[in-house]
Length: 272
Image (tube, helix red, strand yellow):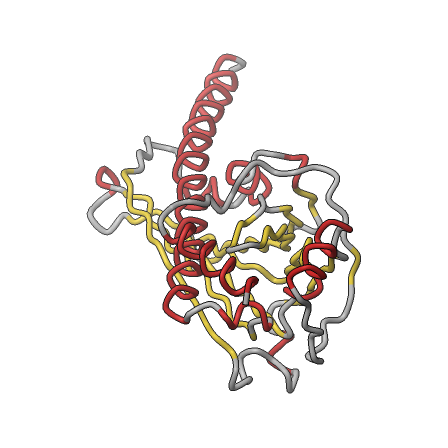
């Protein structure tokens, strides 16, 4: 019950803005892969629990491919004990396209677009022409700090840049707090809207983040309303952070793209 009280108190603190879900990235975090089962969790008394905390709890990593959990009988999406949380956000800002420069052309360079959205190269690794592994900043949720590692996919289709997560891994979880099942979904889109003419072009985008999981026993002691408020607050702040990175990074880099293209055209004209 002491753990329940602590979790509830942390939940209330997070719900009122006491925690920020993307604190500065910590270094030297290690975790090993393991399969997360749904077996019983041993109960501990307050003294034994405190002693275990002092010894340093064993930490695990939970990993999966997007959609892979749907094929498992124990998938959180099909479990009667599963809970789901989601958040979405949209962007709609002016976008200046001078004559001879198209935002669609800019989006074709997916590597450049990715760098504009995730400029910290120390936390990303290119896997293919359209996929990157990204070490996200830590997320603080109740008493937990989780270090997500995701595979981000960017695809360009008919002037629209589609973003989605194809694989994910949650590092740094303590044994008792590892969920029996966990599904993560992230999908987004970005495009130039010229429906009102080129001079009134706007940058539009939409991002959806959803999680579905079977909560570990300690988390089930937190009231449902408190848990939902905390979870949706964390997701909303994460969505807002990603939106800010896109709005600032993409627009600024597109301005550089315009200048680079103008300079290249001027240099070409000078050689004629």
